[in-house]
Picture 1 (tube, rainbow, N blue to C red):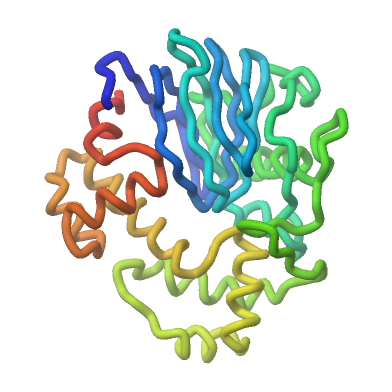
Picture 2 (spheres, rainbow, N blue to C red; picture 1 turned 45 degrees about the vertical axis):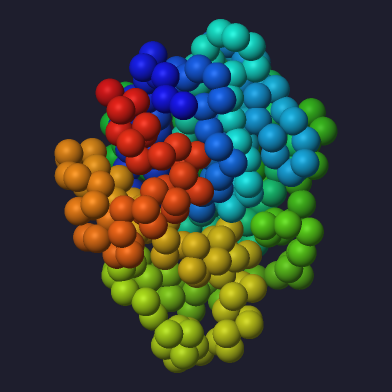
Amino acid sequence: MSDARDRIRLGAGGEGIERLEARLHGKAFAPHRHDSYAIGITVAGVQTFRFRGTQWHCLPGQCHILHPDELHDGGAGTSDAFGYRMLYIDPRLVQEALRGQPLPFVANPVVDAARLIGGDDFPLWDMDDAIDDVKRIDLTVAVVNLLARGVTGGNKVAEVATDGATRVGAGLLDLRALSRVRERIAASPAERHAMQEFEALSGLDRWTLARQFRAAFGTSPSRFRVQRQLDHARALIKQGRPLADAALEAGFADQSHLSRQFKSAYGLTPARWASAIR
């Protein structure tokens, strides 16, 4: 249920990077998953979420790190509101910095911000600092260092992370081939491409392509496509377009289809998201 007191403010972003600040009440997010790394810091109240079978609590001064395509929810751990700042970063940027290695996975998602370089002033959460190309690289390096080192204090970092128990063997990925597929999908997400097209484009068989795409970018080609559709729909909704029009323009079958996919990706209905944006 929507709470009129809920607030979501979008911060300064850049290519492959989004930032937001939110103050929410009650059960804020239904179970959902997104195709980016989500790195946030709690600034007020108690934030609680379920992640990989465990209920976690994130207090002020603690941050949480969620891998792409991992199911989680979110809400207030007490009767009071909770507030947080969040950075979402495209795994492609992490992948570029890693030079083709599989994406790292932080097994323990809650970390004291004091253990990070800069503590609470870690540059990820400066909502209003403009992101030019230099800043974009700086932020990406900060994220990669955080992930690759497992922060500090005993976080376990696996070599490879996927959406569940399955682990892809470590080693370099054919990133150029995978990027061609990724770019083809991103260029026209409303279009449905055949797997044979991706095989011809990448030079990889469909099974290798599917495994390596997930290891490289943290999600499957089909889910990556839906997320790009949702990106377009969000932009249209923010402009004030009716949900039915946004759904069709973004390539969804109808408004109901958009709403289901939107809630699956963000934990909110499009209407609640639109009413909370300030």
